[in-house]
Image (cartoon, rainbow, N blue to C red; front, side):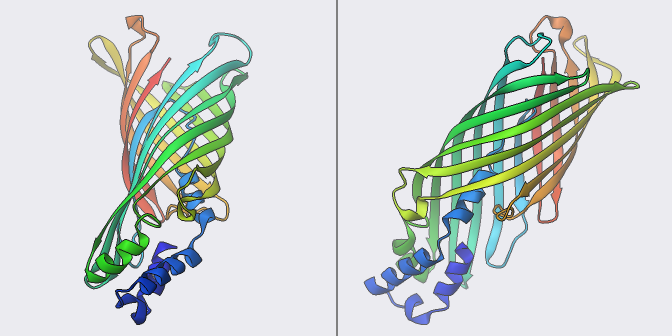
Length: 320
């Protein structure tokens, strides 16, 4: 949307090379005509996801570049912490999960030779989820969940070139670029946690479908007043392979990490990609002999591969 607007603007010589108040007003009008709060909101909603696993993760995504977009990069970190009430109860077990998230989307916009905009969108957020762990048989647990969250969104942009500095910066700062906003997020998900031992291997299958709504709160102008929604499917398959190695007397295992994430809906490519796969390796240390509530620790790294994106990520997990 932003690139389309800039292309329209720079295609009007009378606007692009006139340093007058009417020209700046016309730029703002073009921006208003191009504004789509639903598309922008869907992009933010797609970045908010309930994690079925307890893993703390940090990932960097590199969406494919399109014409005029320079080095788009999305950095996303999540810190979930779950507390299960009566974890040894035979029936449904209620739980609460807090999720802290940080993400930064950065990109440059190559408008025309000598004209460039460098922009970063930063989000700080927290959410609280409540649900139940419902055992179905010996190996499967189903997790219905509802969640609500609050986020702080900031944009910072720098303008380079005579046209960008004299026209685009005064016209778009505080509107399209260089603004702060707050948002609320709410949603629901249904997840499953399947674990079993196969020969000498432990198999973990975690999956979930989440639907999130997001809307701005007390937006300073209509350009930061957005709303949207996103439906996300997550699948994570881990294989734990015991070894004869030990660290400080604790058994060590090798973990194979595999995953898939897909976005659905009319705005499924709001982030520049509609899905991706993950593959990696990790190490798991069994510390159950230490007498702690946490029974194991996991450290891993993964590669991210998709039709329109690639990247990498780090994982810190724990088991109780």
